[in-house]
Image 1 (tube, rainbow, N blue to C red):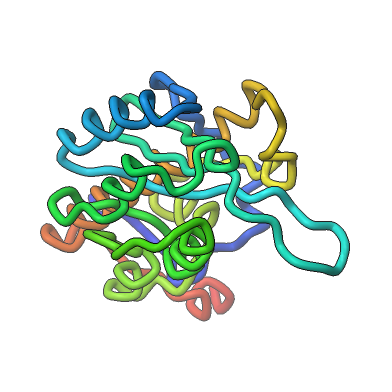
Image 2: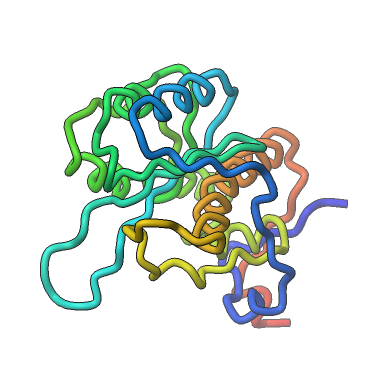
Length: 210
């Protein structure tokens, strides 16, 4: 039976879906020594998911800088505290790597924000927003894409919390790790569907006319 996906997912359906949460190990990285070890491990993996978090600004004025860089493989996610690390040599090595695909969403924004911390030449990155268009999906948000492809909900409740806090709570860690890991899941499923053709694209106009 072919998987049904939609060119535009009905946002009102998301609240009814079961919640998905990264269940692997989460490691917080504070120092360059820890970052070096984390990067060595990450670059030994076949694929990585990547995302960033920035402290929200509720008033007009300059934006805060990236506070967190989360990088996941299938079962481990490292949370790099960028507000403490900055563009350290190991983080720069990770971002400039050209061997391991790093999957993200709206990567132009993430790259622009990371460049504010220091210069680097972006390596091997894959933006899901470009690839979903190839099979006719128009939604660009991670929450809608995950709901569309997997029928599960990624909670965004922690999105506007303080990512510069001295200690991140478990809810923040879980949220950050899930966003990075979900990019891998979407990428692998998208590749599977593209190669197998095992899907049926339903357009929102067709749903409304039923």
